[in-house]
Length: 455
Image (cartoon, rainbow, N blue to C red):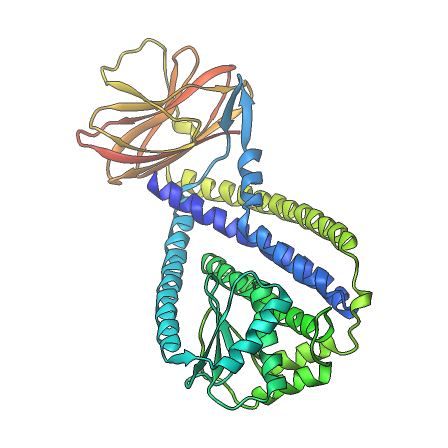
């Protein structure tokens, strides 16, 4: 049971990661077009919506509910999970979990480094704080941001979500350039970019194996920088020209920071990033941006098309999953017994072996610890004439002998026998309630992983 839960967890994470990847590549196509048209507002907003597809397991839910059938006002899951896929997903879960734990460990190391980094700073002087207060008031910030000077800081950075702080290198500042620096960093606070930085980090630990999410994170952080550039140069409360703004940034970019601190926004990230930001902002005109209503309509269309594309991908995954299930089921059947070994036991035949009914709770996978000379069977489930019941069982220890089969509506038992791994498909001759059973023919306890599916 625990193995099934772990396998299902990773399967859900994997399918959700696939959903996000589909949406991300669709967004990249639109980003290329909208960037040429200078529609930065839509790009920034829609890029953050892509994150939803990495969080909501739409494909997993689609596959799950696609396998549910209603019979006698009861939902019965008809899908079959082969042991090979089950164990493969379980192993993948443990690999994923190792990577996730490494990310958590790195988080605590980085948090410690940040505290040490901030501890080496001192409060900024009165003049810097006066300029900062003026900008905060003009930007209508709801929280006050502390400014500190740090001798280890090479370029200006901002950090913190609940208590943001700006760290400046200890040096003499030209008043105009100081205003530009503080304007840029306070824009990050106004746009809640530090929150998005943290949020993306935690999601990236879940999808650490997916390179597309790393690309999305880089894109969103890059566009957050561009949006700050836009508001600083062309916004309603801009304080400088394009030339003055990027002259200040390029002056700070002459020195390369060796700090690799998470959860911080730097005045610049790298030369490639600065060049990209300058190209984006050149010849920008705020008046050409789409209205908010149009942005909302485009966003709804984007989410709708992304959802349809994701469901199409889900259908493809479902078909591939069924093909893998059939293949692995056949492999297991070949290692057990074929239909030629089927034995029929008439109703009312008492073999003297205790029979215990186990609740299956509409599941098609069970793990039973069966005592010696005991029979376990599932609760009854409804099957129509002409359908088939595919049953597979893995036995541990592998040298123990079992009978495995079905109980028909009139009590007739049809079974196959063997050790280690058994796989068999039973033809259904009558409509009614059927049960699956495993009989332990050994004198000691065995563990049986039982899987069945109605086809």
